[in-house]
Structure formats: C-alpha cells, structure tokens
Length: 80
Length: 488
Image (cartoon, rainbow over all chains, first blue to last red; front, side):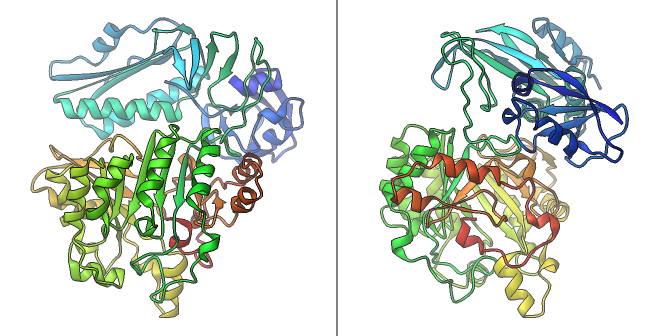
C-alpha cells in the first residue's frame, strides 16, 4: 500500500520535508510509518512515539493503515 | 447553534465577526478571550511568532471543541478563530467567544474552548527572537538563522513529546496515618534516614530540573509536614525564583499550626486529604485518631491564603461513599474544590483485601455514580460541567453547582485514561525519579548527586521511558509499590 505522510513544524524542519509518500507492506500500521521516518537523516528530532493522526483524526500508534491514507506526524501542539 | 467561525485563518482576527456569529436575542452575556503575541518568552526578547497549522484537521478539531462546549453548557453559542502565518508583537493570534443567557456559563464555555484548543488543535508556533534566532515552542528542536542555528534543547520532553514541567517531590515516606488504601497497619519498612535526600539535595534537584523547564513543584510524602525544617525548605525552593507554582499535599493534621508559616515562606497552595467529615470514621479509615478536625484545618489554610484549596476524597463503597453529598455540599458556600478520587485497587489495598478474600474492585465507585450522588447535594441547584480552579487542574473533570463558590471534581484513574495529558514525574524521598506513578522504571538521582554528576542525562533517560499509558489500564493491579512510597 502507499500512504502520504505529512510533517509539521519542528518535525518538518528536522526531516527537511513537509510531505512524502511511503510504500508499506499490507497490514502496516502507524507505528511502521514512524519507524520508517526514524531511519531518515535528521530523525533524532522526532521522538520514538509522537502524536499521529490518520485522515485528520488523532490515532494511536498501532492504528491499521489502508492504501491512500494520509498519516500526519504531529509535534506537541502549541497553539494560543 | 452557531459555529460559523471555526477555523484557522491567515487574515487578522475580526472580533466583530465573532460577536455576530454568537449573537442572538437571548444572549445576555458574551465572554471573549483574545491571545496576543507578547514581546518576551522565558527571558528572550521576541519580535514575532510564526504560526503553522494542519489546517483541515485544525478546523475539524476546533469545530468539535465548539460543539462540545455548546453541548456542555446548553444555551451557549461559541465561535473561535486561530491565526496562521507571521504575527508581530501585539497582534492577536487567537480569539474565542461564547454567548449565553447569563455570564457564568459564557465565561466557563469560553475558558473551556481556550484550554481545549491549546491542548488539541494542531497548531504550532515558532518564535522569532531579536538576536535573529527562531525556535519552535515545543522545546524539542530549535533551528536558528543567527548565532544559535541548529542548537538542540532536549528539555523535559518525553518519548511522546509531552512537555514535563511538573515534579512531585516526596519529602518523607513516613506518615502519622495508616490509611487503609495506602499503607499497612504496621507501617512499612521505612527508608533509612541516611538515604533520604537532604534539603540541599532536594533544592539541587529542583534547581537542575528548573534549568530543563520544570515550572511546578508539589511537595508530598508520606506526610510532608512531618519533615523537620519544612518551612525553611519551602523558602529555599521559592528562593530559586524558577517555580510558577509551589504546592503541598497533606493530610491536614499539622496544617492549622503550620499554614501561616508555610504561606509566609512562599508556599502557594495546599491539597488536603479528607476522606470523611466524621471524626470517628476518619479515624477508622486512617487507623488513627489524632483528634483532627478537617474543616478547622482547611479554614486555617484559607485564612493563610493557601488557595485555591483542594480536598481529595478517596471514595470507597461501603466505607465513605454515603458522604459524597455532604462533601459536595461544602462547595456551595466555600471556595473549596472537592475532588472525588475513584479508588485505585493497587498495591497495599489490593494485597490486603485479597488476603482477606475480598475483591478490591468491588469497592470502586465509578465516576458517573459519584457525580450522580454528588448532584443530590445542591438543594435544587444544578451541578454542571465547569472549568476548575485556576491552577493545577491535573486530571480532574470539574463540575459546579449553579452559583456555588467551589467546584466538584472527579478523578478517574480506573474508568478513563488520563495518561495522554500527564505532564508529571515523581521524585521519591530517597532520590529516585519515577516517570509514571504505576510504572516500574525509576532512575537513581541520589547517587549522581552525591557523586557530583549532572542530572540531565539521567533525567532524559527516565523520560524516554515514561509510559504512554499506565499499567492500571491493563488491569495489572498487584505487586506495585504503595502510594506512600512514591508520593501519591
């Protein structure tokens, strides 16, 4: 399956991109996305278990993914 | 129901549009909150803030929060907008408005939206400083364009990116009570006095952690008022100049005598355990009768200015659950915040009850039942969801009787997970840092202190291990340390 990964704020800076496409095996979950990110250069700026959202909703690490899902990896929010 | 203005936007905040969005003939009150970019943060001169949002999710989440507020405060209408892009000092970054027939629900609904927005809406801010640097405010990675480019501030941030700014410091494992839910009747094997952190060591831990972002400290026990020299220690911690909030958890026995001195030394507020208003029953729960009158102690704390005052009540079926209405009624005419705590059938209680063939789970009174029974205390006044006391809300969900001075809170370690917003770590009396109340992991800061080594690497390691959710959620309720040993 192929998913779109969105990165924001400090994580986008750390990994040098705001979005990327990932090809994952069937049965993959959000934790696999984080694991794939964390082997990339700059990944020390992303914690091992960050907040994630799938298709604009907060999700657990371990949330099952489907082809075409949009997975956002979110730094601790800091609005206001 | 109007949620017409529920979005992140690049245009300046239009307050008139917000007012129009919630106006209606029955709206006798409107409460507005405006967040504004200020010129300094944590000592650094700020020239502006760049806001970034995950726009579609931010709109969705903000809309959900407004809908929640309108459902919690029937009759309220709410609207909110959050800016994106670069804002200079003095510009409005966020605006929230709530209208209602009367002012109290308008204030409370507005506050609810602000607090939930800050907690949930995916917006980030990057501060730009006068010296040319810029830094994301989550404290994780700072990328500058000036001299500080690329520096990393790990700070007190755990493996999930939660900012940890709150430390509970157990000053002693000893207690003058033997509460049934906390400690065996015979006491526990006490930590040898030579292993207990000295005043110098406690101050040094807090000083070093303050450099990593610690802002709030609660002194706990055992019973912290049993520690010799407590007043002087409070004065030294306050004298660090780093703490926004310095509070104390106590059983209250020595509070009437010490409240004024503690307040003068710089203590901000107290939480007091009150499991019963009936002296004989309190003595049964505590397994000791020290002739203690909780109302007198709380009034002394009130008079000393140690507010907002919180009462913690561990609700146990068949023991004190019949007092829920009377305790809730204390909030009608006193500015007290009574927090009912669902019993946590772990550690000492679980083991001693199981040994007697009882089921500790059977003593748990669920939050919904606690609230239903508390609501009977209003004498016709309705108990409604509310915003809690101004500081230290922690994991409680607050409610308030119409027109009451205090609030009724419920803390639900068993029914719901509050781990997602947990921002606290604990220091045991013998100097071990525990990232999670119910976790197994802890790191020994005392050895490092006594060897003159810096604490930051150990703290970073401990936070990396802070669990996302505690073991209670997996219903593993045996074999954990007693609460008195880890500071509640």
